[in-house]
Image (cartoon, rainbow, N blue to C red; front, top):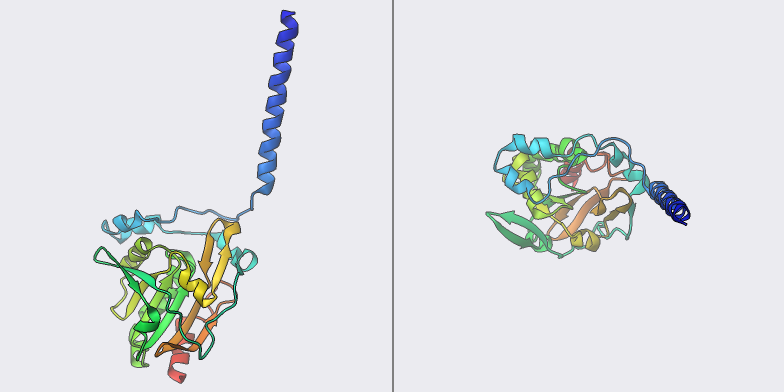
Length: 244
């Protein structure tokens, strides 16, 4: 009887191991394959890191996210674009961290009687945003000013702590302001939500640019591929500003 009990216990353990292996294989089959290495993204603690200098932030920023090349495959718009020429800019507030205080900013009211260039990006510290898209607007800030732009707003679908750290690292001039749309409320009101849930990035904003005059859209464009900078580059936007 004792041997029978031992055999029964051994068989039960074997069955338990088989069940665990089967469950592990099932979970693996549901995993979305990602190419390349994804390094940690600076979270709210990145703002504290900013005080230790740009070098420490550089070590924490995203590098080599080849998986984001699949934006055009995995990312999809979940609502209709409302930023059409002649339409009013949404009054949904965005946020900006200034001297430790979170300010709620109505971009529609802020652009009243002024000319604003609005550049929306999927997230702070991402390679395309940091290396290809935003630097052109910082570099050409004076040219935009000369062409009639009172302000350039870089709106990132990240929380205001991270956006503040990003701004501190890039060191823009006063005419280039970084703001946050962490809950994507503005992006949703503008009809520019990008669904990257399958990549583990949740809901983001489309990569877009617009020229705003007196609270209304004078020109706008959305990148068909969020990993590329073509029709929303600083050169293209500046040329559109000079035409309008």
